[in-house]
Length: 613
Image (cartoon, rainbow, N blue to C red; front, top):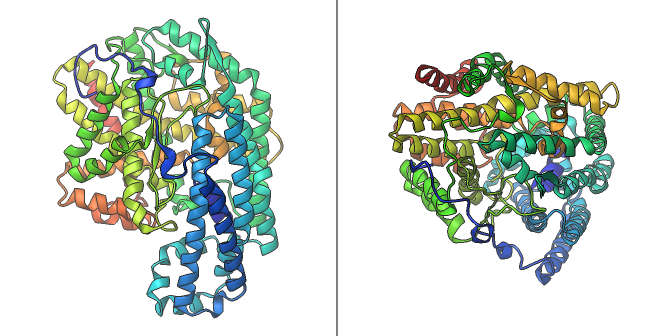
């Protein structure tokens, strides 16, 4: 099934106030992760052993259970699910290691070939177990209910079965499902690899230096406007020089998805993602509408303020993330960043900080920016029998501190949910952002509370507003872009020029009249990897931010036992849906007021800035 295929292949992947601080730390002094908890290297003999054992187990599993599931007792079916889970965990460990090795250096041909080889072998093995979820979905409801009623071993997996069976109406024949599963490595996975390797291999010339994408984008936060301009122009030119390849890749992947969606009967391009996120179409539509209607009082109003701070009527697009004129170019050492985040987590609850401390003590973080490395940041859960890993590109800026807080929130969530097991630990994307955004908010609030200088507090508050706008407004604009592009692609291939036009339309609408754009900005959609890797992922950020804002509002209101309830929510993993998770806090995401409650926190921050100007 598509849901299971997605799960298999996606399994990869300022507290102090001085104006000056530690200079950006030397790359050599930043922590590298230790992947030996998975495997000792690509030549580790355990990889071949695990592949062989998983292959044998999958063959035995196929022989023992194919065509018999409805006739099994509840206990025997529970045993089968546990065996399926164990095979998936072994394969997940292999693919997690391959994905992390590739992320270290996407220009390394050996790592790329290793990942592709593992993907092909894992796909071959998992083909033997593909029947299982398909056949489970063909069991009549009454029969499955009876099997679960008689077996505690099976009923433990009830949440997984619930989510699996949500895809029953969209399931194809076994033959078609197998063909789609096997085609993945030469279809969408191959196009994804082409995109990744192309972007990782690009260099952007700025003042005699050939910068990686991460380094070039980092310069858009420099205080010197000329530095920002040169970096922005270089990124735009580099993307523009490769825009035909990026456009072909995107068009192909959208068409590939549309063919699959049509065969399965999904009503809208976003429908599969919503179903996988365990959230109703109406809830996502309500979120997108609420944010879109709030553009004028959020982003338009804030950027008008920012332009006023700069003494201009309009800013250039490369000024969007520029520090305020009164902000010092504060840099943070790795130790400062670590202590900032851990201190904020500890202030909320020592239990949370204790989990987070492991990432530093046990080398679960890779922080140095380096050529070929994945240019973003992520927390990879790997498998429950191991632990998560965090990838960063740490440049020593305040935003890097917030990124650490964000990814560490993911990591804590993943550690706490791991005891649920391989099938029940993962959360849908909409809830996966809960702990990360909450971690950011805790860190920001701790930093703000420690600051006494009014000017510095204003700079910090403005920075937080920008981060929230980037998370809510910008990601909703990305969602609007995807929605428009997928709809138009149904009528035929989109030219690079048309993709650029749609990008400019949604950027202008979402960011407001405070910006002017040069021609090369039309190409900036091309580096947004979520468009390529996980279509319609992006609204999950806005969902998570608004959800956390509402949660934090409840916390600030002195809700009894909040910390314990919050940790229980994280421990639940994927066993509960958003209504069940939010109910203990008196919140309901299906209520339109829920989204406005979350957005009001952002508008309240803008109110404060207007009053202080």
